[in-house]
Image (cartoon, rainbow, N blue to C red; front, side, top):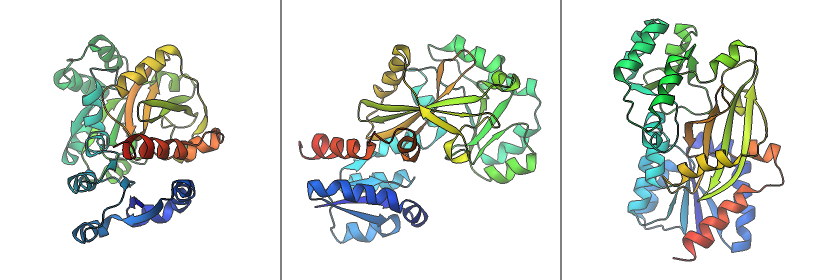
Length: 309
């Protein structure tokens, strides 16, 4: 029996040690883990190759959909990939379940116009276009009207590399976003930055409906606290109220494994920011090496989703 781990070429090379972790842990189940280049999938499916299941580790919802149509169990599903790999869709989808960062989505060609607007004009833009249609209307208004800065992000960016303050050098922002669609958001927690405190966010790792672990990321020199950009990380214990917030997200979608990212605002609330479909585990293994999320994920896939069906 084979389990496919599907990557683009660059991702396969960069994640060789991660693939090896799956290979080692699958031996107990007598399952072979085969790294598969995404570009070879059409030929493999045409030839009738059928793995036990597939883990899609590249961001391309069409791949998840193609595998599902071929009858192959896919993790994560096409629905998860389609929603969660687009920041605007994610926040729109979950806004009625949890307080989420207010977000407006624009095409790439509109970026120069957005960058030309002054702070007050951006607030008016939200007042004109943002639909306060969730049960968190008052909180959303406060986040928008009290903000001291705004953020632009490519809708499909990951790792914080296509995330910019509206006040950054315009040439850098234009080059970084390129022709990608992007979201405009208030910089939640920006008052803390002006007071010299650290920017903070919380990544919650989930496996199925289980909250596996949480990590706090922080940075004193950048509003982005991403681990890949030098942010510091530590294990984080969720409070009862915070657990309820995460469970509200879990009730809204069936994940395999994902990383749910919350910004910690000036009032220490968790505010949904984005969800990583292809979540990496390097940060978790660094600050909590006793936790083996790969083993947990495989048990979920094989025992609950494959061997029981």
